[in-house]
Image (cartoon, rainbow, N blue to C red; front, top):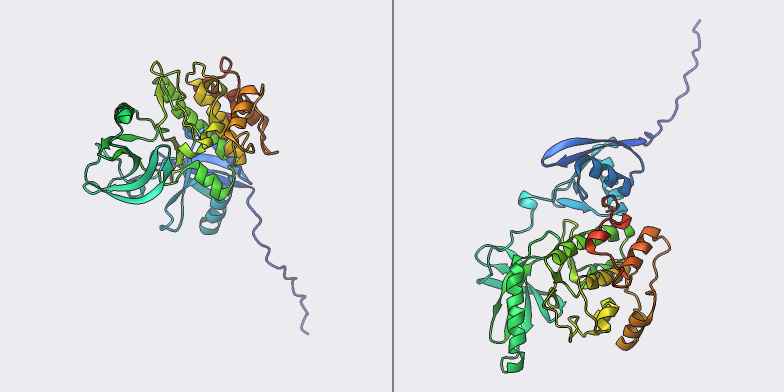
Length: 385
């Protein structure tokens, strides 16, 4: 007789359980190097700590599987989560490859001009800065892309001639200022009815535009941008230059995730500051960023830029500078000068480190830290990029 054999129970196939760790490798200086196994979920601050300790780098990039998308910067936790999902879907859940070097070769931005442009095509309007409109231009001889600010002149106004000559001389001198956190200038050209100022093209627009389109920055990105701006200010102040117009509209972004200080129209050289006139523009938009010592007509120095940076960081995190709710410049000036403590609000999620950093930027001028000192604050630590 046949013996009945009971069929073994068939268990449904369960989905593969998520791997608790992920092996992270980084391409640094063209070499693939192992960072180690890190726990999931992968958090950006912790990842940046590891990367900085291992390789001394603070910026992350990822090569998308679709060649049309190229290399993208990893700027915040949202970017990292997206990169993790893409990596899991295309390459499995066990490893993640990151790039630590900015895009190079065919993916690099067009080269910068080596001299004042002469033969070029003026293209679309990028926006309006202080004193003039800004256009995208292409050098017809080299293909280099650059920006051009056009300052309209009144040829018949002899009283303005010394001012125009001083402005022209300043922009020619700015060609010698070269720093990774400062927009590069390539000189200027004076025409009968306008002054053309040539400078580096930043394809990401201003931080002000970015906030208007996408909302306030997450704290991790605000910290990253602040540290880049402070690096630029440290360099400028070390060369006795006060920018005099630090604000979100004058901080420009590029596609590699960096920001640079732009628009030196109001800048001054220490030792040549005319104390009888404010270097800040008299436009209403700028009054929010002007330190109290300037409104008082007192002597000022590089620490004036630090006060403006404090207002800018508030704008990073909330979308607006302090006192934005006041409806006229006189009220803003009065509050900035008379308030013993500058009144600003932050998101509930903001850290104590953030509040302390901003408060110290708003300190009385004799107690206000320098850019060099602020770079040592926890708010500006590299692992917080």
